[in-house]
Each structure stands twice: as C-alpha cells, then as structure tokens.
Length: 237
Image (tube, rainbow, N blue to C red; front, side):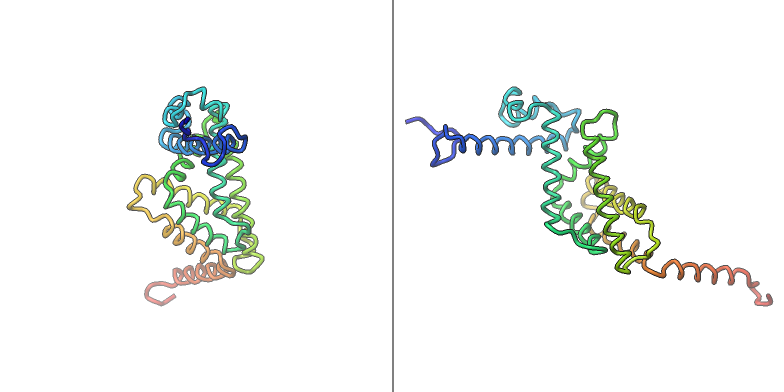
C-alpha cells in the first residue's frame, strides 16, 4: 500500500484536479505566510527567493512554480495585506466621524498583528526608493486611504459635525500621518506605546478643534487677549 503524501486530501484520489488545486492553494498560502515574515524582518531587497524557498521546504525552482518571480511574490504578499484590511472594514463604510472611530478600532486590531504592521512599515518605507517594485502599490494605497478619510470628513461637514470650511484634504493627511508614525514607535517600543489610546486622544483633540463655530470662538478669545494686553497693569489706561 502506497503511503499518502502530506499534500493529498483524505478521501480524494491524489490525481483528481480538485485535489491538486487545493494542495496548490495550501502551498501558495504557506509560501505567502513565510514571505510576509521574511519581507517584514529583512525587507524586500535583503530577502532572497532562495531563503524563502528553503524555509518553505522547496527548491527555488519549486517556489517559482507558484510565483514566477520575486516581484510576483511581493504582489501576492501586498494583496494578502490589503485583503486583511478590506475584511476588517466590512461591506459598508461608517459615515462621517464614525469612520474615524473605525480607524481607532483598526489601530487596536493592528496592535494584535505585529507581523502585518511590520511588513507594511518596512515595505512602505522602502517603496520611496527609486525603482522599488512596491512603489506604485503604496502610491495607490495612500491615495485611496486619503480619499476615504477625506470623504468621511466631507460627510461630517455636511452633517454639521465639523466646520464647513474645513481643509479636509490636509486633515486627512494629518490623520494618516499620526497612524503611520505611531506604528513605527510601537514597533520599536511596544510596551511603551498604546497605539489605539494615543490615536483616540489625538483624534478627539483634533475633532474638538474642528467643531462648527470653533474658529469664531478662537477669534473672540484672541480679541479678548489683545484687549487685556492693551490695558496697563495699574488699570489706568
């Protein structure tokens, strides 16, 4: 009796197309998982196909059977990273400032998946170098993320939650900068940085400053301060 290999599906003949496809899909998932860990630890340029293949128990030729090149493997890794965010967002995006609350929950989730955060941080930083194969991916990603946050801020303005004259594009860039900057600090000192709590604190302060009428209040306070400065200390003015 021939021993069953580890890639065969119990109850299915090993030569059935469905069995081979399932086995191939499992192998691709395993390779991607190893590639995520390797790229996150070593960066794209320092990681080699030979190293990833060895960790997966394959020859380099065997790895190239599943991913035709290192760039194709990188694309698979980035797609896997993107899909995790899409699943977390759900079928409908929260509206207005509720979307900012959702971002805080995304940050909270990220604090439980260090590998994904490290991968994103390493590859996004590398992507600014000339000719990096992930550069267009991150350009598109930041464009898309800015568009999402900008749209949510516009909704908040229309709902009366925020000042109608708000520079939504500028604020959206600031929100993303806070989230990405905190990821770097957290990766370097995870016990010292609570990403979700700090993100919540910053967004709360930011939104409080952007409430309708806040600019008028600030102008009145500034005028009062100037009037106080104009009065001599002895009150004889």
